[in-house]
Image 1 (cartoon, rainbow, N blue to C red):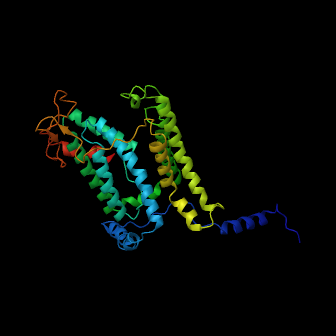
Image 2 (image 1 turned 90 degrees about the horizontal axis):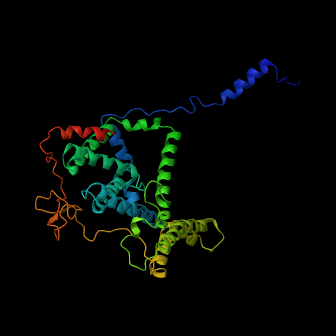
Image 3 (image 1 turned 60 degrees about the vertical axis):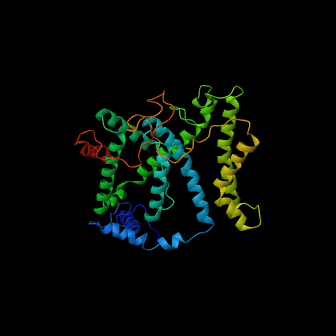
Length: 352
């Protein structure tokens, strides 16, 4: 007996059969029960530090070494670069030393306690823009920038602890995959633009071909900006190409040993950086290239003109041969220029 596909009864039975295969509430976001009053924090500690911490800390092998080198390369360059920019936009109050120290201890503590040791911690463009706003805000209110920034950090820590205490972080699940990919695309775009050439600034390897680039100033007479720009582009793109080249060995027919192929894959970024650095230093050592500005001494960036340390050397005292000293490592939270409302006003920027 043939079935009639146009028969209403057959249609309804077919639809009921297909619907029975569907998962109830499929595609909907389901929030876990709230673990407020600190229970969520205790649960996270039990599932990270209390469970996997010892095994992961003693898991020293080729993979962990490769990831450690990758994280170091990924963090050190932008940290020093952003540190120099911080020094320019904050009048020397923050610089490469401060960003290096902050990134180091925050990254180590976060890796040991968060359960996400491979998360890259460091300065970013949005954070730099936020710092510039805080600096301008401090200038407008006539209060020290470091004091205001410290109070903003206190409020930020308070908001973070409050959110964790009441388990508000579980609401992140409400952010859809589309939202996640929009932010990921934004971050990738920023990093690619900064690496190749930002149309809104002088950042990027393609910018070295500009004869008016700041890096071409104060150079010797035999300096050739075209050679510098071309070599910078070759080394920058070459590092990327070599990284994919070394990673391709993992599933190739080259080398008979899986250990060699796996090693080339794990250390692809490290090998690419070392190779291009060798060419820059040894093969093309006669060509001047812009390099990271590493501080000579590990001390606060802010150099003082006087003992009171209220002016920045050498910008505010050009006739002075050398600085009297540097500012203290510790920030005075009470240095608010007699304005008792400043600590409370810092809650506004922190909420952003």
